[in-house]
Amino acid sequence: MRGGARGFARRCWTLGILIPLSACAPEPKAPNLDTLYDSAASFESQERNPVISIPGTLGSRLVDTESGVVVWGGANGLSVDPDDPENARLIALPIGEGDERLRELRDNLRPDGVLRVARASILGIPVELDIYRGVIETLIAGGFDFRETREEEKTEREINLDSFEFPYDWRRDIVEAASDLDYFVKRKNEQVRETRRSVFGGDPKPVTFDLIAHSMGGLVARYYLMYGGADLPEDGSLPEVTWAGAKNVNRAIFIAPPNTGSVLSFENLVNGKTLGPFQPTYEPALLGTHVSTYELFPRDRHRRVKIKGSDEFVSLFDVDMWDRYEWGILNPSQDPVLKILMPDEPTAASRRARAKRHLAKILARAEQFQRAMDRPVDVPEWLDLYLVVGGGFETPAAVEFDPENGHVDIVKLEEGDGVVLRASSLLDERQDGDYALGLRSPVQYRSVLLLPEEHVDITKSAVFGDNLLFWLLEAPRVGDQLAQPKRLSLAGAPSSGDAATSPPAEK
Image (cartoon, one colour):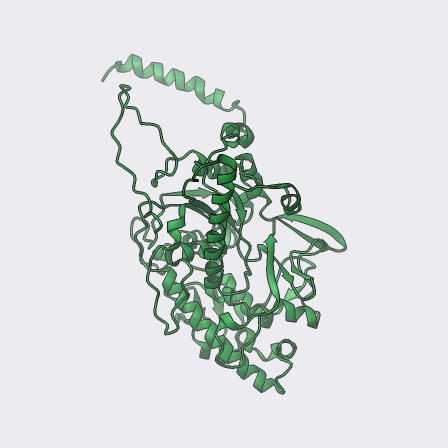
């Protein structure tokens, strides 16, 4: 051994100095994104991929086009009062009368921008909560041409090369949102091409986007990548995985996605939901019209819902279970709400029967959606997938229902971000208790970032922001969308690297 006892003593002496000195070391500061990415922010080029930011559930402002009322995300309150009958009809989706497809049941609400800040009143005191402002401020630090407010973007921004937000109606089927995203990307592709032609001249380079998707927005983005704008087949089968959406995308960053759902979706549908102290309660029958909530159910195979007093686990997609235990929209206590939503139905019995028929369609659609999302897939070579997972919070993991009265209670907590389990974001198939060393997931990510942050606060983390901008602006790309300098060996000679594979050219 080199150095012998004397060398060992020297190392121990040095360590003895470093240990007490480390106690005096200053606390690390949060990364200064403005300084770190100043050069990248000032670099205006076609080499920068435009970004599309996709919010999660509740993250888009909803406006009634007929009356102009902001139903969700207003300037003076988060939502209209759900206890008012007219407002209840605005919040709910239509309940079908017969064989209508869910897609055909329309109302007058339309998305009107991403909700960066939520405003509410608590005991008459106005409060303001950051929702997606953190993501936008991070992107601004990286030179992406967002403005501090949506109003400023409307009035100040004359051209837009690289900065888009995709709002959508988060009440509706996630597949519909993915179809809308497909149309949105095609429109923005043409817009960016024309803008590049006017700014840079000549024939613009092909446009490839980067996606940033939070929470349920990650499911919208992943369906779009796999299937483009394709719908789920009417016969209950699964569509072909074409990666049609991925042909327009080089990098997708998923932030706290509920990839295997959340028990909170089921619990909210049974017990109702309130957004905080002194805030109104949204009744189960109102939430029970929102198709996307059912698509966020935990997977049956992960055994998250059991009967009290037994070891029996149940399927949430069996409409007869909902009928038998009078869950959610089928609970007799919800008839006053159903009477508001279905004024043309003369009796409580006819209203409940219609609600059950409608619920059966939603459950079948949700189960089909989950099967489409859980297929093992090989990610195209040109597509980089990044995952950000929150943690450090006890998160609802399992519920139990009482067969005597149908009551549902949360009975187990696990590691997560307070809303989504770590295992759900990872799409970890070991949740059924069959543990094996190494993550088992049908989706493979290029990199996973684990942060001790809450579900929304994760988007405001400086560490997250640093990683986000590094991935968007500096990390080498598999698709070779950004020109990379030749790598140098330790001796200074050029290193041979594998050629990257790019997406197929559009015909």
